[in-house]
Image (tube, rainbow, N blue to C red; front, side, top):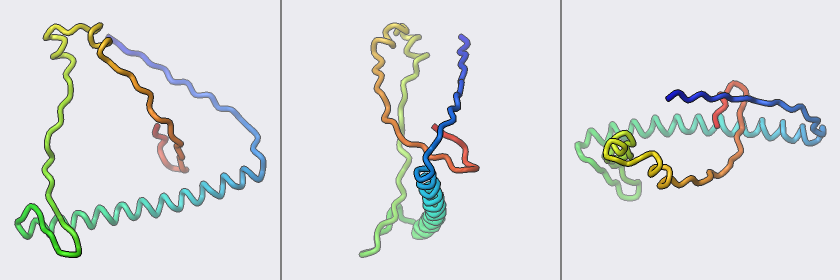
Length: 122
């Protein structure tokens, strides 16, 4: 079965009051600044985590606790499971049964801010 999809995008020009436009511009600059700081902090945290992991490995223990400072623990990945529809259909479940058992829930909307040079993600 071939699934074809088409995406269209409509752009609407609208006039924004100068005061509102200045406020949006100011807040986008602030957002970009804060996001840059957050990205830098995330990189620093990731580097520190890697260093702590290396130090924990040197102890030979799965978990190390230092009173008043915290714990470093190696958490195993565990497992996950998903339903394999091809196998289920091979066992006799029909697409109509699948449709009857499928529950569709709406997702919560959110505000997306795309800064210059960033890829738009939904």
